[in-house]
Structures are given as C-alpha cells and as structure tokens.
Image (cartoon, rainbow, N blue to C red; front, side, top):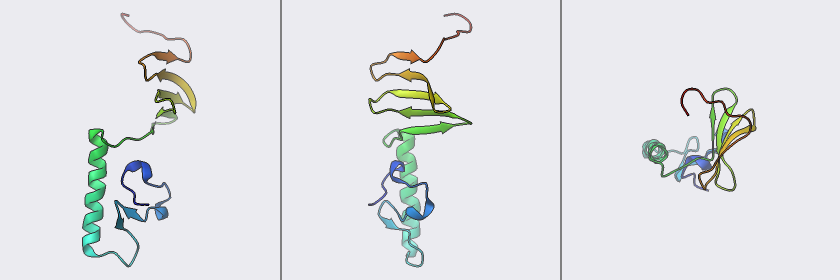
Length: 104
C-alpha cells in the first residue's frame, strides 16, 4: 500500500518501502526517485502543518500524550491515564479536582 500520509508510516524503518508510491528499495531507485521521494515527504509535512492531514496521537515530553478516541473526543493523558477530556460536543471533563490560579 502506498504511504500517502503520516498515519500510514511505520515505526519500523524497513517497513517504509515507499513514500507516496515512490519506490525506496535499495539499489533500484533512479535519481529522479530520490527527488520525488523528498518532494512527496515535504508535501506530507505541509499537509500536516495546514491541518489537511492529521494524526490521532501526539507524545509530548516525558509521559504526556494528546490523543483522539473512537468517539472523536480529545484526551489529555499522563502516564496512560486520562487527565482531561474535551468532548466533540465541547464539554470539558476533568479526571480529578481543578485548581485555578488567578481570576476565574
């Protein structure tokens, strides 16, 4: 299957055998394939930056993640445990107490 966005890339490098249909196999790439692979990868990065390509999970620092669940809710987790949820309807749900600093 042609890898046409970030979500289709594999964390095992050897499993990424193409970028947007451009063959990445050793000893078979034409010079134009190298150029086309880089151009395609750059277009994937731009699609992500513009919001036309998305991911479902983002790791931030040590232990924090932001992810989307099966119901299209946004989850903020620490160590795999849900801390905050923003529902697709706009409700905010906290797992514990909320402490406010300053004016509320």
